[in-house]
Amino acid sequence: MVFVLRSLSREARERVERLELQFGPYGVDHFGVSKRHLAQFFTTLGMFYRHYLRVTREGMQHIPPRGRVMLIGNHSGGVALDGAMVLASLFFDREPPRLAQGMAEKFINKTPFMSSWACRTGQLTGLPEHAEQLLAAERALLVFPEGARGTAKLRKQGDSLVEFGTGFMRLAMKMRTPIVPFAFVGGGDAIPTVANLYRVGKWLGVPYLPVTPYILPIPLPVKVGLFYGAPMHFEGTGNEDDAQVQGMVEGVKEKIRALIHLGREVIT
Amino acid sequence: MKVLITGVSGALGREVALTLDAAGHEVIGMDVRPWRDAPKTVSLHRVDLRKRAAEDVFRHFRPEAVIHMATVTAFVASGDERDRINLGGTRAVFEFARSHGAKHVVFVGRHTFYGASSDLPLFHREDEPPMGIASFPELADLVAADLFAGSEIWRYPELCTTVLRVCYTLGPRGHGTLAGYLRGRYVPTVLGFDPLFQFMHESDVANAIGATIKARPRGVFNVAGAPALPLSVIIKQTERKRIMLPEIAFEAMVGRFGLPTLPKGAVEHIKYPVIVDPKAFNDATNFVAQHNEVDTLRDFKQAFPVR
Image 1 (cartoon, chains in turn blue, purple):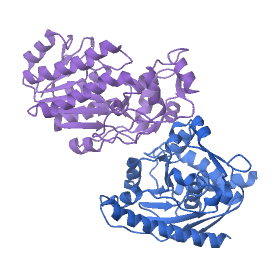
Image 2 (spheres, rainbow over the protein chains, first blue to last red):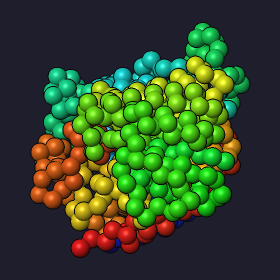
Image 3 (cartoon, each protein chain N blue to C red):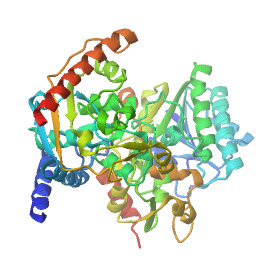
């Protein structure tokens, strides 16, 4: 265990050095991303990604090695397991490693420790301004268009898709950014949510508290899969009519649905 | 050029006066406070901006440019006094400038205009509204003064008005809010939060104001230099000790036990960043900061070592 941790820590530090981000003299970039925090974060995440969950990944070649890109996928699992696995796959299984930067729920920045760790690892609050700033800086932006509706899926809904927002598509067109669709499957098995306690969550300052048969939303060591599709390009200004944008969103949603089916077959 | 500086006896006012003096401008300084070792080439006038004597200085010298720096924060003045200085003083400066032939007024404001909160974006641009007044009401008069100065742009187009929103300053003079917060050995922070702080060397701020006088851009501009750093890094690099307090204890303990005094609303500014995008200013004036973050922190640390 200690050996594995040391090895992961060494690898995480080495990969952080190869991230193509412009770190300043104190190891912090202009968004506040810190090399030291990234290395610690990915050491922990690497334990889950490499040694705890059995993660199948396909289509990594579809993620461009550099330049702006939006990773658009489905939520699966009661907490941000899906996002964490995307971050780990781009960091550990892509050459050169890339940092995926998600759009965090607003409560995260209000919560002690979560606030500072989210900022230091580049997971900024989900605001349109942040998304544009990250893409303008040629970063890999991770977006779940299902939003909080998606994380609230119960186990039996794990591989389903709920309504997609259209903001991501307008942003992709405005910022002329390719969309890489992906599917995350098995999240419902990893964190088998049976109920979401909204009132308790409100007391705790979070949207809801997911409950599993064993109470706590701790992931089980099961098979999960990440399946990336080919980049999709959309022409436009981002100011198109809703109906037109909705049609494009449906195209991405269908692609993700197909990747979920493929993924489900592969991991079972 | 004949330049009048209000608030000249403050640490930053002196830096600006010396910079403009060295650049060959004729500098007229105005302040109620003394500046004992001022160079003889700077014409000093100890007058209150809101009194008749202040207008006499404008009338007599007829400055071409006016740099208005005589504003105060909640750290140095109480509510009513702040209103009189920040709002009454700013109004007087613009009236005197217009009446006595000035062509350019520079209002030196603060980047805290934008406010700090958990759901505000990084890299504020000049077209954003002030969002922090509800959580930090002590900022209201400075925000109002900034907006009032900005309204002069369209109200009196014959007068060139520049509103600068300058990030925190740091350096050997120890000027400003951030320098005051970092002055002691122990720096209180809120447990679990480590916001980015954007700061700029004092001499770079003076140079930025000098560049404003030279380029005379009309409008509102953010002014900043090197990228922001986490507060923890700033505290460590200036060899202070960070005291991480739960928010409830933070509010109870600041101002006691040798910790710096902070206005109540300032806690949001210790939890969340205020970072501005200075691109428009740099494009308009060709300003480039000369000091990076390492130089700036070193200069502050050397000038204010912890004992």
